[in-house]
Image (tube, rainbow, N blue to C red):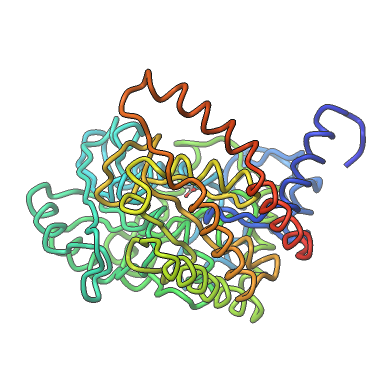
Length: 443
Ligand code: DSN
């Protein structure tokens, strides 16, 4: 990176410093390798290639075609699927294309509610998925139930039988346990629905053999490529053998939905980087990485639990932990926790929790995960340090309580932020975090 544009150059340097001196715990983030980043600024960044390999609307695509075919083949092999489209710009467009391929506007669809850990595109009322489709949402239980995780399959089955959705989504953005895909499949099969698994969060764990694969049970799989899969930002849609059996036209319908239905030219530099990420994810070292992600999440979860923090699902079975601060800190405490933790260099996000008593902007939980820290080589010792540091910060903010009215909130939160910024104990903690973080290189 050169000084060509000073303003942007300086901001990139600042972001580099922020990433290096802090610890990234947002579970949907990661550090792509330099081999994944290089194709992003390669000559493929200059190309247009609307269409698909061998069927383009522009010339000069002989090498783009090869890159795209390699990416498709690698994804097919890694996830054991029949068909792949690697062109979606990211996860939301990938999901939109699934709607376009399987439903007509106004059809009923079903997904996990956003406030209970689902994704916007699975039918949240603010998203296209509820604007153009009749969205029915299922929730989760507050406590783990036998081998069903937090799902109440009787309630989900009843909902599906009453509403007869054409498409059911399984997969989440804030769910700490393994997902029993076969239970969802039984329900979808009973009502004749397409079942799509959105594995954006867990794709790397599935590829690395640390989470059961949805492939034998669902018709369609979508994922982003930049979370646990550790690739560039991007999206993939896959059709399984079960999907082909239900509808042999699905691959054609999905291709048509992505282009020309939803997108123009694919980002070929992104496709090349996805191909590299898929190569990396097929290496034995990726299995070790995926196993360490899960181990680290368990160590961090245990440390927090020992410190009296209530965890949704009583721990973690994947890369993610959802701490519910309602009882220990009060409804809305996620806001205070996120701010104070970010201030000391532990970046995570406030999040709603099952049975949320506050609101999405001032929720009662925090969501964290281990994919990025694990990429830096952090293990048990560092997870204990992170957990113990979090406990210290959470103790410091314990007496802050979210005021009920908007009028009271504005001055109260301003005062809170000022007190956090001038707190000497937090300044000391920030230095400790920085000292630990800089010992672990970012790829
Ligand atoms: N924004 C992603 C996440 O953080 O989980 C989901 O799209």
